[in-house]
Length: 203
Picture (cartoon, helix red, strand yellow):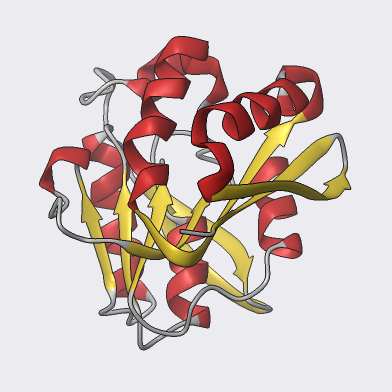
């Protein structure tokens, strides 16, 4: 499949849903997937690294998954922080539908699958997790991060995972320059060819 499909609101290819057996939070579950989304056959390597390396998200408040796909990050956040509200954001409406369906299969009432423009602009996030869509191009990626990272609340953390050979270190430098001293940008982990970046909002 041409990966450009999953960057589109409507992937333009048939939505044929099928079972997806995965392990989330040590539990074997059967969820739903389809073509036309990111990593339809399971948890991709980058997301697996993020889920292994990131500490638990904030236990309460609003949490954010940027680019949710079928939902592995958002679902994990919701399982770890059942008292929080998880906003699973994607431009791909099929991804949103699958994330909502999978949250229902897991009995998670604290997941909201939303288009970016449908998220209340007044909301500030206690934790942001993302395996950001690097392949949309540098300009589009920078605009995406400029949109969401300033909505991190003071004291909150954003955790991103980026493949080293796709510019993880240059992205970390750009983030530090772009966000300035209001944020601390660190690279606390490297695993399986991926960097894990942590951004902490100071003020």
